[in-house]
Image (cartoon, rainbow, N blue to C red; front, top):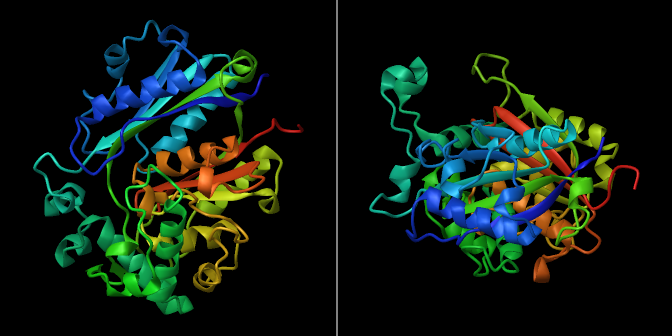
Length: 389
């Protein structure tokens, strides 16, 4: 069975200005990915799409095949797994290629949440009738990801002594990495003092603890390794993947806020790749909030539970650190395109295309995506060589 590889990576314009619909941005990203791989539309026999809840399915769903002008496909899905969707479409594409269902699968994510007369805060607000929320959440006005993640972060602070300064260390590290990424939407240097002066959004989160939403699209081509051997770019191998899903019922004894399923997903992915955590050169995480980086690193096993705050404060995730993390600025300073943010940066690093932010000798990347307020976790292990190579 031939392994699956990533043969193409493409970006649309990434901006905080309104430049068109998610569908238009997805078209641009798809064309870029095909050019990057040296493929034509006629070579594509699989299409997998994912998008945020605000993007109409008619704009970026199964009908996107027609928008791209693709011919008959052997694989077509519109997949929804919250923030983990992007990793899941890479996973499904890999399985399809390995099973012989497709040869070249185009995987696309796009979003357009900023501008077009809609304030960013309104675009990200959860506006559902109270009756559709669990009783206590509705009663106490718990709306949106900021409040839910804020509660999780506060519990970690109470249990383990994590501080807002630890969150600030994550934000400052992300900004340092973003300084070397020309696609990052915020690249100006930032200090811990800058972080501490930024306004509260939802305590314990300040402005710089939260992701920067953008309008943009990213596309990836997953190919059969044999069919990709003569393509334009050196392949990036999909060596392993794993999932972990725990429903958070918020009952007594449920501690999903501080012990997530990232550990399960990471262990499964590394086992499939026949690698150890010590083999990982770069870690790309779903850092929608600074707390996400801390708890994910703990659960993946890079540091003991409860020690994530001091771990990041000691510079371990910074350029030159023990485990370079979110090396393009992540979602905090790079661009928030859900799971495609860490996936795209992992590909950039393994290809050696990181420029000023390139991690020397990056051959193994662990990508950790999440969705549903830390309910759903999918990890990918991407490598520069096939297993056993």
